[in-house]
Amino acid sequence: MSEPLLSSRRSSSEIDGPEDGLLRREPKRHRKPERHGDWIKIGLGVWAGLATLGVIVVAVVCSGMKPGSAPDASFPPKGKRNVVFMVSDGMGPTSLHMTRSFVQHVKGLPWGETLSLDKNLIGTSRTRSTSSLVTDSAAGATAFSCGLKSYNGAISVLPDGSPCGTVLEAAKLAGYKTGLVVTTRLTDATPACFSAHVNLRSEEDRIAEQQLGDYPLGLMLDLALGGGRCHFLANTTAGSCRADSRDLVAEAQEKGFKYVSDRAGFDSLGKGNHVSLPLLGLFAPTDIPYELDRKSEDYPSLDEMAEVALNALEAATKDSEHGFFLMVEGSRIDHAGHGNDPAAQVHEVLAYDKTFARILKWVESHDAVLVSTSDHETGGLAAARQLHEAYPEYLWYPQVLANASHSSEYLAAQYKEFSGEDEDTFIRKTLIEDGFGILDVADDEVEKIKAHKDNAAWAFADIVSRRAQIGWSTHGHSGVDVNIYGSKGTERLRGNHENTDVGRFLAEYLELDLDKVTAILKQKGVSRTSTGSPEYSWMGRGLEELKANAHDAANFHIDALDSYHGDFKRHVHML
Ligand SMILES: *[C@@H]1O[C@H](CO)[C@@H](O)[C@H](O)[C@H]1NC(C)=O
Ligand SMILES: *[C@@H]1O[C@H](CO)[C@@H](O)[C@H](O)[C@H]1NC(C)=O
Ligand SMILES: [Zn+2]
Image (cartoon, rainbow, N blue to C red; front, side):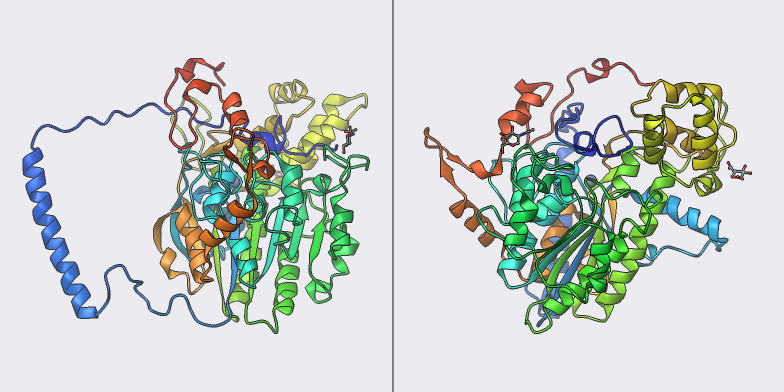
């Protein structure tokens, strides 16, 4: 198996996964009932309540609206409809500031020049999961796919262990075509949540099987483009990371899939105009390289893949009364966040912004809506950093990011391969000067890199972040609200929403019945153990394993926040 080149000491699925601190410990908050002035408050509350009710009654009577009915009767619209849902994995508000300022700097643009995303901001999304205030991508995407909260690690499975029907599945069953476009593994959490159901996101072999129809609903996907080929290849093949000898690529081809796996194959799709569905395109063993490192002669970009998907799905639904549901993920914004690599991240965000602009343009001339949001923020990114005890300066330096021509992940991989004589010169000149455009690397920074020869990505990234005065609070996720962007027709998502509202909006726009899909999954997918308890064995290893991996199994929760267990002392402090 070829290891993913993720800029961390572990693979992306591990660092982003349930195995790694599933439940963030939270101090217990005891809510003491207030004893003073309660009656005054209740009295005022009743009065305010009655007054509000009066205003509502008047408003309802005047407008002839039923209470609780939609403010605009035109929703959902009638006739043929298409939905493109974009996910900027791990992109928080600071990523927008950083990228916007970076572009203004390198292109010499005035302050008022913004990204396409900025021009289409409509609201924000609250991201907590059932098990933590800090969600992972699996629970985050389950909120979008099922419109329901679940635990960190859940792939469209609820805390009670039952599967929940997804927007993509419901759309397919209703007659729509369906597609997924990503830059990470197709089996990673976000795409998996739309097209599979497993208890643990690490079950990527099983996710791949389900994505190709080997589960109770059968084949639900018409188009899938991205990375993650290794989970589709038999373990007897070079480049496989499957545990068994199933050749899913061959199985897909037998089912009628057109399969492409490289740039030439991608180009043969003629921007999507020469495509027959179903289509499977797997362009990298794991992740497609970062935009900053990607060679366009080797790998398609997110924007190019989105173009193929739009054209192919539009053509395939030309004569249908139903359009399509397409999910497009800028997957690796998150990876640059995990790696604390600001230079890699600005290029990932720019690639996403370009793709957003293309899709928005298409949506505006069709019966369609575009919704774009993030599952969570990654890195605790800050557009400022205090480097010394002295009072900090009010600034950060985009020029440092502009000088970088490679990611820290790429440089770490180069270094790992190095076996020549003059290691110091290789690190200073070939990697840091040529790769980062940084000319003042310090001796202790070189030593830190040498101390992590196996994976020096974090050490490389820190060299850039410090000079740019960009701060990070974690190599994991954070709990901050993330932005929602939308085309015309998504006005219901204005303001601050729960992430599940985003999923429900997608379903309501297409008038999908997710509960019906859930019922089919449960009915067709249930098996009974010898003890008689229902078990969805096709969903893989279960919650018991999650519990076993929790560091305090006795207090393990997937449907409530855990409490503080003295964790402050549990780990050696990071300096
Ligand atoms: C490949 O998969 C088969 C099961 O399909 C298993 O018996 C075998 O041990 C696997 N080989 C390797 C090298 O993992
Ligand atoms: C960027 O690179 C140029 C030339 O390679 C160099 O002169 C300059 O100091 C670098 N800037 C920063 C902020 O490192
Ligand atoms: Zn994520």
